[in-house]
Image (cartoon, rainbow, N blue to C red):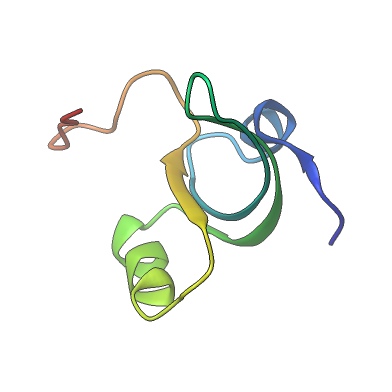
Length: 75
């Protein structure tokens, strides 16, 4: 799969968790801009399992503005 904007990936895979190999980053704001989709799933644990031994610079993100019930985020 070729590199796409993170926003395009989020629009295409609604209500899913994404594992993305980061191809372009805005280092001033530490915002990932483009990446190659490695995996997607409605199950967060599947994505975390696929990511746990990777050495590349990856992003795990949920595609909606609000997380599913029972999840929280910390920054």
